[in-house]
Each structure stands twice: as structure tokens, then as C-alpha cells.
Length: 635
Image (cartoon, rainbow, N blue to C red; front, side):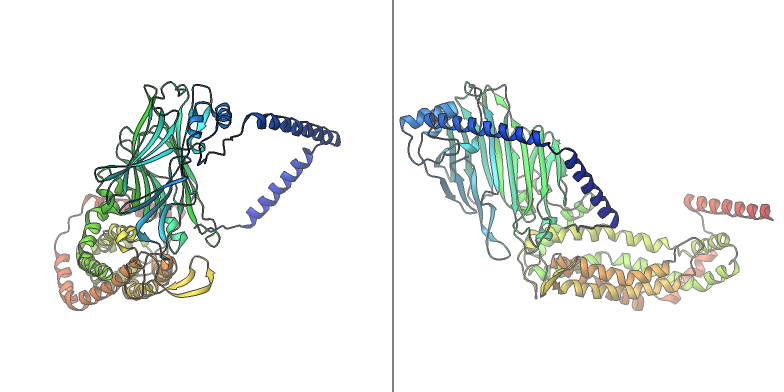
């Protein structure tokens, strides 16, 4: 969650704006005559409303808010309803219960008679961090309504009318039909087909016999709103991975803002995902893509101490097409885990709603880490599977560490000669740089040879950074003292909240920070020892690296205190292995005498420069000539 910060300029600006508003309010305040005239007008309006209300009471006995009848309307009430809602008065005349409950292997669903849509969706196979059942829809956090016009120039919303429920069987499937009836044979129907052990509901909206009842010159609009219910220990951490995602224009995946309010209007939408970290509600267009879809996302967590029930409010609004004056649209409604394996089974790219990372990072996760971890966790405890995967990743990248240490060893061996060059050309920095590069080139000891292999590790590190917080398999899986590898591993609860840190102490980030400190101490110390004095106009890299030795572990300690303990476990084991690999390479693999001998042989061989090296040498030579010419002109 973003912290609110106020500086002195913000305070001054706020005071100025407040003062301007007061001035405007004062200037626009009414005169005593205007106040008296306003009172007279208000009194006349009240009297008119009271007169209208008495007339309405004499005619109408059923209001638009009284649509939960469990008994049939009598003739007087029916006439009143016809005056109020026209053709839809038939729907009000039918009795029925408020809710219909249906249970499958994975769901417990409650359908609202009023509005015809789902009032509750409980996932039977999951509970939250506090052992409370997982609800994706409950307590009116969701609204799914259609606005349409009828031929008598009335505009109606399905949320105001009772639907007639029926539950039947279609083979092994359960079919729930909710019909908004204009007559016994004319209706608007929501049809839900539930399959065994399936989180996807076949959902359709269709009308029958309403081609003359609909006013097709006016659009029929579907409006879907839902607040995401909090399920995790840390609402701010969960909110970070709660996001509206959608696929459009074939295979393009886009998202609304992660931690701020956002809105967008898009065309050709295949599906909309209301993702709540580890659980998702997804609307899939099973026939034609949706047109002109207006979507919004509103962050509901301004203060995690106060806003504890919901994370975000999502809305989607789009029009349904008429076909011969009727409506017929097929959807899929997914209520279930945000699990890559589960979502991939539906073969329409729903797994892309999971934030694996963009570009090459997402590709590494999907092609390597997800299958690898799925294989390891199939026969190993989840904590052990993380450790084994970490070992395999480090072995795979061990050649990178070898290249880095070999480069460091070469630079260490060349240090005495480099010091001589710096001393010889201490008054000519450009010449010193040229000679340094020439020596490194002959010896095959360019500093870039150590940096470039290190850059190869970045895609792997970032991919794993995205993998662990979104790995559904880790949810509520324990290891050692961690109760849930997908959440933080609190070993001490604090009686107060520390900004950026939290109200608890997690142990795995502390262990990872210690391991990072010693690893950086060992590597950075050797690098700074090989560096000469800073060049003129350039930052002191040795001083910056010394700061990084303390800054990086501190960042790990604070930032990862609220992150998934599985990720902190990975970094802890990864750095322990890195320390071990470094010691093995340094003491048993790299022989400095052999490296020195190779350097001496390399020096005697003619070294052909590539185009980049030639260009750099020419540029440095030109710069040196210009510098000398400037000195002569000054003299």
C-alpha cells in the first residue's frame, strides 16, 4: 500500500485551496431575500409531493421495492403493478422463495430470486488463513444486472424484479434456470449449467417471445460489479496481487492499475478476470467477443488497519446485441482458484491472467519453473521441493559464478601492473585509461567479462520473484515454523505497526538478509580491493559497493517481511549455496598460478580488436588529442 506523504509545499497548497474555497463560498452565499424566497419554494415543493403521494396511494399498492412476494397478488394489487411496471407486472404476480440453493462437488451456490443472479458462491474445498470458508460472492458484494427498455417506453433493471427458479438435470449436469416472466411463454432467462468437479459454469442470457416487448432502438446493457473479499493474513500483500485482467483483440493481455484507481474502454474482449490473488471470478464470452466494454478498478485499501474486508471494487459495463429482436448470449462463469494448471485446462488462455511476469520472465516461469516445481512437489514436501529447485537453479547458473570469479582472479593478478600504469600516467587520465584497456585486452581480463555473465542471472531471479508469490501450490503448505509458504512466516507479533515493515517479525527474511550480507562481504570486498582510485568526474565505486553491503540486506529484511515465506526461503538457500560455490571455485577450481601463466601467454599473442574496441580506442585517442590541443591554447 502506498504511504501518504505530505511536505511543506503540500500543506501550503492545501491551506491556499481551503482559503480560496472559503472565499468562493462567502461570495456565493445568498442574500436574506434569496433565503426567504428559497424557503417559500421548498414549502410549495413539499406540499406538491404530499399531494402526489396521496394520489399514488389511492392507485398503487405494490411499489418497485416490494418484489419479494411469496404469495400471489390479488386483482387490486395486480392492477396497481400494471400501472407501475407495465408488461412486467406478470412477474410480480408470481409467488416464490427468496433464494434457491444448489450444491456441487466444488460449489455451494445461492441464487437470488430478486435479480436472478448469484447471491452466494462458496468454494467447498478451500478455507482462508483463519479457517473461514472461501466466499467469492457474499453479503451483496456482487451485482449482475441488465438494463433494458420496453415498447411502452419504460426502462427497467433486472435487479428490481423477481425471477422464477427451476432446477433440473441434464445427464450428470445440474441446470438452474432463472426466468423473468412477461407471461407464461414470454421471458428473459438466466441459464446456469453446473458440471461435476468443474469451476466453470456454462451461463447464458436469452429471451423468448420478447421481440415485440423490447424497445430495440434502445441498448440492452449488462452491468457487473464485484468487491473482492479479503482472504489472506496481510490485506496489503494480497491487494498487491489483486487485479482486473482481460484478453482482447485475439491474444493481447492487459491489466488495470495495480495499486491505484483505473478505468478503460476496450473492444473485442474475450474474457474479464476479477482476480483476488489466489482466487478469481472470470467472465468468458463463449461466442463473439464483447464490444465497447467499460471497465474500472477502485482500490479499497487506503488504511490496512481500517479497510479489512475488501481489497478492490471492479466494474464492467457493456451492451448485449439484439438478434431478430431477441437476446441470446453465451458466457462461461469461472469461480475458483487462480491456479495455472486448473485455468490452462479450459484452453482459452485464462492462465494468462496470472502475473507470471512480462516477456522473457513470464516465458521462463511457464516453460521452466512451473513444470519443474510441479514435478518436484509431486513427490517431495513443498519446503523440500523449494530447496531442491533452488539447488538445481544454482547448479545451472554455477558456470556464471565461475566466469565471474575467473574474471576477478585475472583482475587481481593484473592489479600490480595496473597500479604501475595509473602511477605512470597519473597526470594523464585518458592515457592511463587507454593503457589499462590495452593491458586488459591482451591478458583477456576485461571487467565486462565478469559483468555480462552476471546479467544473465537477472531474468532467472526476477522470474522466481514473480513465481513464488503466485504459486497456488504453496498456499497453506507448511515448512518448519512457516504455517503458509505463500504468506509471511511470523515468529513474533508486535504490539505496534512499523511503517514499511509491519506488525510482526518474519524469520526467513532475517536469515536471507544475513546470508546476503556475508555473500556480498566476501565478493564485494575482493572487488573493491582490486579497484584503483576513482577517476576524475566518476563516482567512487568502491564506496558505493561498501554501502550496498549493508543496504541490500536491510532492503531484504524490510521489504520481504510481508512477502511469501517461500520466496524468502529460496533467497536464503540460494545465497548459502552461492557462498559454498564461491569457496569451492576459489579454493579448489581456480589456480591463480595457472591463470597467471595463461595471461602471460595471452600477452605474447597479437590481439585483434573488434569494431567496438577499435571505435572506443579511436574516440579516446581523439579526446586525448583535443585535450592536449586545449592545453597548448591555454599556454
